[in-house]
Length: 452
Ligand SMILES: Nc1ncnc2c1ncn2[C@@H]1O[C@H](COP(=O)(O)OP(=O)(O)O)[C@@H](O)[C@H]1O
Ligand SMILES: [Mg+2]
Image 1 (cartoon, helix red, strand yellow):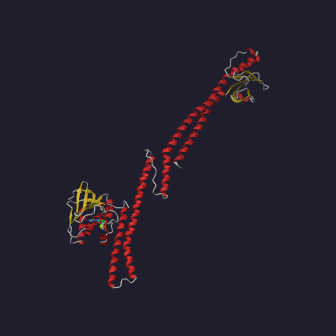
Image 2 (cartoon, rainbow, N blue to C red):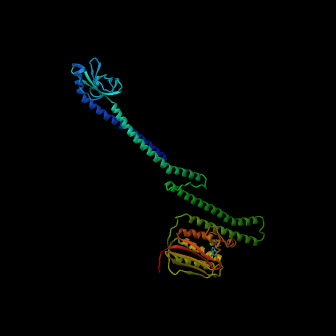
Image 3 (spheres, rainbow, N blue to C red):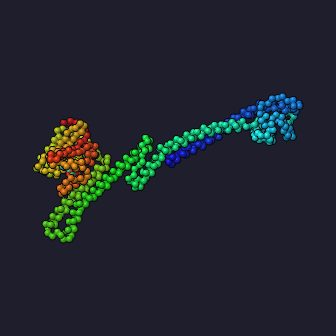
């Protein structure tokens, strides 16, 4: 059930409860007044007997007995005839219904057979001669009391209900209606209206904050969807290039275009290289996908100098003519996935090997910077064009497409570094000056300081 329905249901329950309470108060009030009337009747009973006796024994005109105002006194003869002796000034012709007088030994409510009064409270008092004295009093005061109580209570209830409906309208206006609108908009977005956002009036309500939060989420979702779309498009495009080469050679072979054994060997070698590049790209894509799955990695303390020396040794095997030095003055420990960290530093180093002349020097270093340790791979290459330097960490970015492609680069190396650094809660970047060289760096939180 929606909150709005619940509110309305609650409102109705309270309204019904108030109505019942109103009725109960009226009944209680009426009964209280009736009890008073009954007490009045009981106290008038001996007086009534006295009055009747006086009337039957003496001349009625000589009567001087005073009866409480509004009280009726009558004499019920054994033959059923009722003789009025005292009648209220407000209703001189009043005559109560006294059929079945034996039931009237205690006060009863009866109708009247004449007069303007509608209902009376009647009590019978038997006399020694077998006839009966009757006292009666109008119940109008009880009805009036009940009515007054009902009206007072009813007005109070109406005020309460009016205030409640104001509150409900208010909650609906500032809480529920905006949420309903947002739900509709969210449904529309789910159904495909991807460009729409929620209308949010910043009035400081919870609904407004919810709307703003939803909009932030929608935007983030849109950005990540777009990134994913671009990534898939780029990946397909990148995989297509080697695939085209492979298909080209196989078509050429089928058409008899590869006549000599040399031509076949050459084609097979090229096909092998393209296939290897595709395999590298698929491996890189798989690694990136795994790194994108957050929370999967287990970080353990890793000694940094060991990682840097391993990377340098591997690089010296690849390019024995290059001068590669490791500068790690202290023994730094970081929380890391060792294989991933090794892969990140290797990506920097192999870029330097690929994108700079083999005769230039390469320095792999680590130094403390506050609570962080900065790993740097510095080369003396040509540096990076300032126009593209902001893009080098993007997926599939290659500034020098032709050369990088021919040298087998996938354009994913630095993107993988960035993902690995995210996995470690660190930062990465590049400082480069054209003609001087580039320094690619990674900063990670230092685990322990100065362990010698
Ligand atoms: N040390 C470097 N010196 C000059 N340019 C570099 C260096 N490292 C990376 N780059 C540039 O950044 C681009 C992206 O690098 P990367 O993501 O590793 O892709 P790839 O190495 O496959 O081309 C490279 O294509 C290159 O143009
Ligand atoms: Mg690379």
